[in-house]
Length: 395
Image (cartoon, rainbow, N blue to C red; front, side):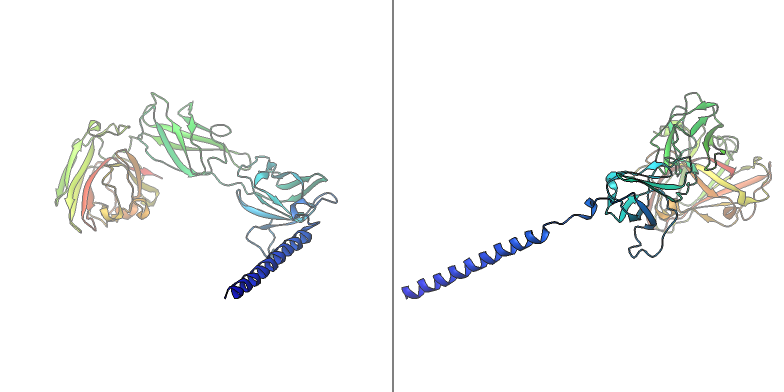
């Protein structure tokens, strides 16, 4: 038995040694295979660079060459001698080379997020052996001016303007914002929004004006309202007949009733109540109509107001707020297209289309008119929100 155990251990040692020898031999083979290998991004250029085509990075089969790309797009530049790059520019704007990869016959790069107003419309590719160029367009994006988050922000405060491409147009440096005749400070400029500081002492009904140059160099301006009071339907709610139906409570309050950082400057309505699903509640606001101009085409007008909700009671699709004028068809407000809003005890401007809630028309100036606000939640709901400065405004 002892002899057998020794014999078995000897055989096991033999096979272990054989396996180790094979492993070492395999490692030697890999080293020999790698000898002389040059990585694709290290291949020397034999001449000046050549660009033959540009493709979207997702076109892995290289079937559809492109001649233009939006800012921020990843593209593949095909050609020869593309290593050892010193600079790549699109329309004179340099590429961030730390995000580029070259492999002699191609380069993967991102079109710069910044645009040049020079409109050279070329790619210029420079290596250690020279420069190549190719006609290529980076379309100049349109500046889209959206809306202010609170048109009744107090003077001295910041208001956020939403839209698109504010960063591209370099607001605060190349493009400007004026409040009245004073240039305003802007901050937090991004692609989709920027903050505008309203100078202290700015009076109501002052224009906020954006000034910039279009892609062809022509001067452009857009004006937005700051604390627009001329078209308020109910002003300070004096002389307004308020009637309600259902369990909803509605109170008339002044600015001191809230902790909001901005004051509306007029009284507002405070809606409260605890409701079961589909409970029907109405609040009718009736008074003589003011003169807001020619209302022949209601599609040219919107209904605006400021809303404030307490942080624990956001406004959602289930809130069931609807509006109509003069007993016409109801317009259901779906806050933030179903996402809901929470203003966290601050005033926020809401804009709704006028025509769908005014199917019976808007009364002429000086004639009696009623705006009905309906609250019919689709689920159990606790209401605690405020509405103020209701107005009809031309788009």
